[in-house]
Length: 430
Ligand SMILES: Cc1ncc(COP(=O)(O)O)c(C=O)c1O
Picture 1 (cartoon, rainbow, N blue to C red):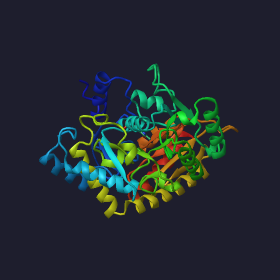
Picture 2 (cartoon, rainbow, N blue to C red; picture 1 turned 120 degrees about the vertical axis):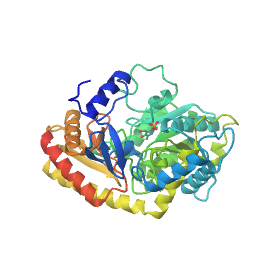
Picture 3 (cartoon, rainbow, N blue to C red; picture 1 turned 45 degrees about the vertical axis):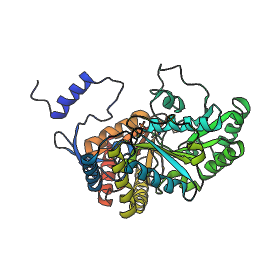
Picture 4 (tube, rainbow, N blue to C red; picture 1 turned 45 degrees about the horizontal axis):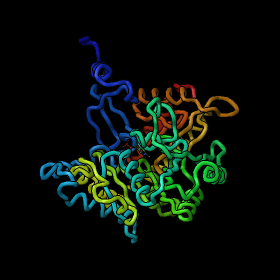
C-alpha cells in the first residue's frame, strides 16, 4: 500500500474495488464522525454538512436525545418484528403520526424501513381501497429506487436505465415550474387532458405528489395547484397521496409541506428525518383506506424496528421542546436572503427558490434561455467541498444545488457556509 495516500484516498480505492459503480458517492470523502451540522472526515478535515444524509438529519447528526434513546432501546429490545409481537414504541410512533397528520379524524399508520417501501405500500393501499389500477405521479418527481419507485419517478436517467419492464398503469403528469413558465393552470390543463386521453379518472386509484419536488429540483407546488388536486381527487374518488419523505419534519417551515396548502391528504408517506438517522418510514392515512388490505397484506421483517421507533419518538420530542420549526423558518429566511445576495453578484445563479429551510439555486448558462448548466453546478459543488461545505445537486437536468442543512445549524454556521459558497461560485466562474 502506498503510504503517501491519505486515509480518504486509501478507503476510497477500496470502495471502488469492492462496491459497484451503480451506487455513486457524491463526494470523495470518508466520514469519521459528525455532530449537529458538522462532519469530520477520516483525515480530520471538518465540513459543514448541508446535505444531512439527504434530508435525514433535520435534528442534526447524533442529537444527544436520539443517541440516548437508541442506546436505551437497544439494551431493552432491538428487534422483535411487529408481525410477531407488538411493542410500545411502534404503537406510540403510529399514534403520534396519526395525531400530527389526521388531527381529529381517524388516521392509522403502518411503519416500514425505507422511503421507497413506504411509497410502494401507499400505492398498494390506494389500489386495495379503490379497486382501481391507475396511478398518476409527476414528471420530475422522485419516489425511490425500487422497481415501482423508479416507475413512479418522473426522471429517466440514471434511475430507469434498462431496468424494465416497468409496472403497468403508471402515468406522469406535468408539475408546475414558475421559473420555466409552467403555471398551475398549465399543469392542471395537462392533467385534465391526461384524464381525457390516457386514463379516465374513474380508473385512477391515486395521485402521488411531493409538495416540493426534492430530487426534481426543489420546486414547490403552488397552493392553488395542491388545492385543485385535492378537489379533483375528492370529485373522482381518487386517493391523494402526499410524499413527504424529503419535505417532512420541519424542512419547509411547517411540520409537513402539505400544510402550506391547507389541504388534507388521504395518505402521507414519511421517512428520512422521521427517525434522526435511523432507518424508518411509514404510511399515514385515513383509517378506512389503511384498513383496505386484508390481514397479512402489509408488513416486512424490519418495518418499524424498535430502535428506529425509539429514535423517532426522541425526534418528535425534540420538535416539541426545542422550537425547531421556528428555528428552521428563521434559517430558511437567512439562507434565502443570502442566496439572493449571491445571485445579485453571480449572474449564472438563474433562480433561487424553496420553502422554509429547503432552498436551492438553479445554475444556468450565460445565454438568453438561461439553459440548465449541470457542469457549472458540479463545479460549484466541488469548489464548495474544497472550501469545507458539503452540498449536493438535484433537478431533472442536474443543474440545481440544494441545501438540506440540519434545523439545528447555528446562524453563525449558516453565515460561514454562505461565505464558503461565495468562494466556490467565484472559483467556478459563476
Ligand atoms: C420524495 C422522496 N420519496 C421517496 C424517496 C425514497 O426514499 P428512500 O431512498 O429511503 O427509499 C426519496 C429519497 O430521496 C424522496 O426524496
